[in-house]
Image: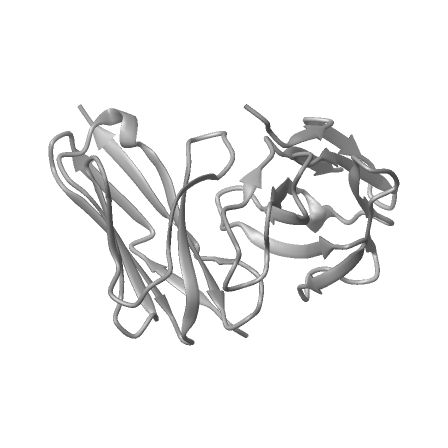
Amino acid sequence: EPEVTQTPSHQVTQMGQEVILRCVPISNHLYFYWYRQILGQKVEFLVSFYNNEISEKSEIFDDQFSVERPDGSNFTLKIRSTKLEDSAMYFCASSPRGRPPMNTEAFFGQGTRLTVV
Amino acid sequence: GQQVMQIPQYQHVQEGEDFTTYCNSSTTLSNIQWYKQRPGGHPVFLIQLVKSGEVKKQKRLTFQFGEAKKNSSLHITATQTTDVGTYFCAGTPGYSTLTFGKGTMLLVSP
C-alpha cells in the first residue's frame, strides 16, 4: 500500500540552526501539506502546496519557514533558525485532491520529531 | 480565525461502554473528516462526510454531520481496548484548508 514517508524520524538540533525535514508524498497525489503537533496538543496546519507553489499557509508559517519540491518526489520543509518552541512532531501529508468540494482524505507520514535544544 | 472545536478533551470509559465526541465550527463546513491517532502514531483517516445531515457507519462507529453543516459527532458503541487513541475531527471552513479540532483522547479500561 502506498504511503507517505518522512525522514528523519527524529532530529535534534541546536537553537538557531537550520533544519530540513524531508517527505516523499504518495506518487500520484497532487496536494501536499505540512502540519505540526506539539506534544499532547492538536494537529496544526502549517502550509499546503499545489502545482509547485504554496496554496495556503497559516500564521505559524512565518518567514523562518519555507517549503520546496526540488524534484518530482521530495517535498521539504526548511526551518531557517530554529527556536525552542519549534520543538514538535512535524507531519507531512498528501492527498489526491485538496480543494473543496473535491478534497479527499489526507494521508499522513509517520512524522519527524524535532527537538530544539 | 476559523476554528473547529471539539469536546470533550478526554474521556475514560470501561470496555463495553459507549463513547461520543462532538465537533463544532463557527462557520459552515464544506465537509468534515475524522481521523484517529494511536498513541505515538500519526493521524489516520477514518471517514469524510459531505452532505447536510449525513450519517455513516463503520462497524461500531457512527458518524453524523449536522443539518447546518456546522457540527459533527462520532459515536462508538461498546468500546474495546483497541479503540484507544485520540480522535480528531477536521473541517474545511469555506474554501480554506483542512482545520483540525484539538481532539478527544479516549482511554478504555478492560
